Image (cartoon, rainbow, N blue to C red):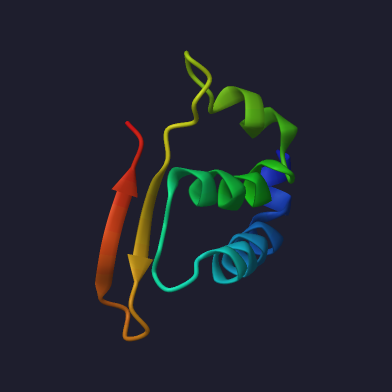
Length: 78
């Protein structure tokens, strides 16, 4: 088993907490997405390296949802 399997629940809680703390007034920037991503990378150093590609960016797709679960906005850096 890899760290991600063992830490799946805490990873989800940390990402949720980071997103709620960092995203204000529905304003999302690449910097905010990077900070949210750090909440994930801290749990599994193998994923930190394995998910990066040249020129050193992790491909990430984020979906921001309204309180009712509908999609508010989608972001991706690839």
